[in-house]
Length: 142
Image 1 (cartoon, helix red, strand yellow):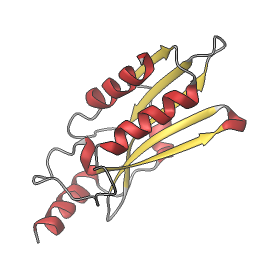
Image 2 (spheres, rainbow, N blue to C red; image 1 turned 90 degrees about the vertical axis):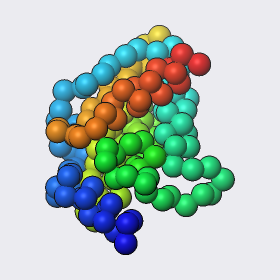
Image 3 (cartoon, rainbow, N blue to C red; image 1 turned 180 degrees about the vertical axis):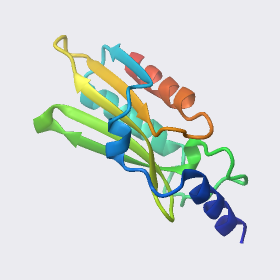
Image 4 (spheres, rainbow, N blue to C red; image 1 turned 135 degrees about the vertical axis):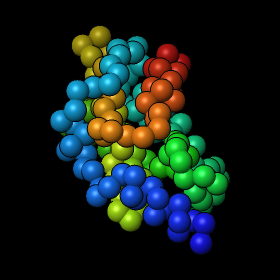
């Protein structure tokens, strides 16, 4: 019952699911250049975010309180397109309806490093950007 109520509250807060296209139309909330190659950086960011939801195959379970939404409450996806020389890490809430919350785009620089842009859905409640950007920065410097 608590899990259903939590999912319902999160769904109401995020309204009808936002798309990644809507997020891509937003100006970046954070940008940065890092010395690590883009695919290595993308994998590090994805692994660190995905680790938030559990390790060793632990199934996802919502946090005790659905508010505010935090990194462990999300589903992550890595989209690595070597032909396009771009990787994207996105986060979405569990539905119904599923809703995209942020996307991190990572492209190579001429120097062999990475250019990172972090965009989030407009009007996201809670503060996902600071802990997410801290992961990006840590992975970029490692």
